[in-house]
Structure formats: structure tokens, C-alpha cells
Length: 417
Image 1 (cartoon, helix red, strand yellow):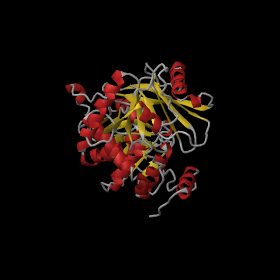
Image 2 (cartoon, rainbow, N blue to C red):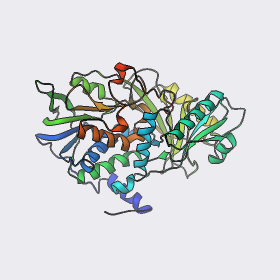
Image 3 (cartoon, one colour):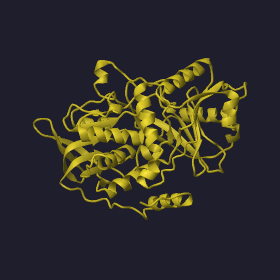
Image 4 (cartoon, one colour):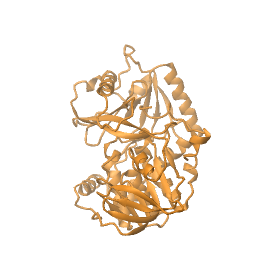
């Protein structure tokens, strides 16, 4: 296995992105596979990789209606953290961070994981109390998190404006030093290359149009725009389209879809050292390795499949960013976009078996999807291979919506809910 460092890692990443080093050729689908994964984003490709690597199941087809990593994986804001409030959330997200920390070596591919720290601002007494609650809960779960007063927050992130004259003055911040960012599309390419090398078929431009079942309700495969493909197990990992796919199998999902907006600036030299988030003003910001400022907003307040979203959401976010970081007030924005996120009633994912035998689903991540990618794929692969949940995703079942035992991370998620 080759290992890379420094510029060699970046060069290897760019070679793969330009298509010079692909190890798959979009094969024609076979008549039948052992497992079909619907969705070639980060979670779907991670699931296929861990099915092959951990469970020895290589007779796998990953079906993608568009192109590899062309959905939410390619249009997220790259933040990685595990400072969530509830035990189940701390479990899955910290499991993911531990996998992130060695992922470039694991895949022999640079995913550009940078543990530069994630700082979540407090602007009032309530924010400070909530942050302290999170810090104590995190420490009980073995997750790092610490409180900074406003001067310490300024020292950690010098561009931060801590003037008391702000509309939302900074009172302090919670800091998770192990948090950070990664390169979103590199994660998809890394998992795809590694899974393909173990025999997994990645089939692009292959939209699923139906899910087939026998008379006993057992999944037998799928219908696609490239013909029928058989399988005894099917996993659905298609952010923004899960409800549509599950309806093909006769299952209604407790999901709503919302636009989640973000934008990037012109590239500049390194000037921003960490990730800063603010729940109160619904804004977060970091700087990519290419030099762009990556700015995220909240979700729209109405369900939609629009990939633009409401202009007032972006305007509010940019006003807040310019107030908290005056040095960016003259920066030019290059592009904005809206990803479609699936949201459950308790704002936490579903990683579970379904009422249809042989059908499994991974969905409902809301704003938390990218940061969970390795952990999500790892436990979902276990669920499919063993036909039972991993202990880490045991609480993320569909049944919780009928029993009322919800994992309500509404106050603990990023900035969108």
C-alpha cells in the first residue's frame, strides 16, 4: 500500500478527481448481486466499503441515478464534530471522528481531514448555560469539549469580533478541539476507489424506479433505468429522496425535506484558523484548503425540493458573518447553493431494518450527515450484514416513532434546527 505526504497527497487527490487514476469503469449491472446499495454518496460508498472490508461481502452493487458523489456529499460545508448532547448522538458521531482520524491511511487516499477545532459561540445567558450543559454531557460520554470565555475565544480565533456593542455580543464559546473539516468529494472518491478495488460495482446513471418483492414480502431486487437487478438485500442511502424510494416498497417514512443553504467566497490566503458556529444567528464559517470561506446558513422554514432556498436566509447569515468578522465585509461570494436534507421529527437519523424483509434504510440526518459519514457507513454495513443493528445504532430505529422514545437533538444540532 502506497502512502503519501504533503504535496504528494494533494497531487494524488487531484489525479483522481481529474479521472486519471480511476479504478472502475461504470460497469454494466449483472443480473443479481448479494447486496444492492441505492445511493453513491459518502454514506452509501462507505457502507459498501465496510461490507467488503469488515464483513467480507464483496458481491455488492452501488446504484447512483446521477454521478458519484453528486448529491449532498458534493454540496455540504464539510464540518466534522461530535459535541452532541444525547448519548446516542455522542456514540455515533464520536465513532465517526475516530474513523475520520485514520481514514486517509485506511483508504490510502487523502481526504484532507483537518482537526482545527470547532468553536460554538454563546451570545446570551441561555446560550452559555446550554453550552455548559453540552460540555458536561460530552465529558460524561468521553467526548472532548471545553468552555472558553470571550477573551480566550478571541485568542483561539483572532478575526472574531468580541465588542460589547454587537447585536449579539459574544459571551464565550464551547470548543471541541478534535473537530474540524474534511474535503467532501474526496471522501466519496476515497471510499469508491477502495470499495472498487475489493470488487464492489459502482454503477452510475442508473436510477432506481421500483423495488421488487415476492409474495412473502421479501425483497428480490430493484427495477432501474438500466434493467432489473436482483438482490436478497437492499440498503437505501439517498439523502433527499428516501421517502420516494421507500414508497416504492410500500413504506411511509417520518421525513420532511428542506433546502439547506450555503455559499463560498473567492479564495484568499489562509486567514481563518478554525470552524466557528453560532446557533443564535444561524451562521457558521470556516476556510477550505483552497482558500475559500465556506459559509453555512439555516434551513428554510418550509418543506421544498428547491436547490436555491429563500434569499432572506442567506441575507441574514451574511449580515451576521460581517458583524462577527468585520474583516470579511468586502469579500466577494463566488457561488451559493441549497442541498436537500431529510429531517425526522426528532431531528436524528434512522439507521435500521424496515418492515420489509431484506430492506434497510439510512436517512434523516438533517445537517449531521457529512460529519457522520464513516461511522454511519460502518454501522449500516453491520446492520445489513448481520440483519441486526450495531450497538451504536441500536437506538436509531423506526420503532421509536411509535413508542415515543425519541432522540431529540433539536437544540444540539448545528445551526439549522
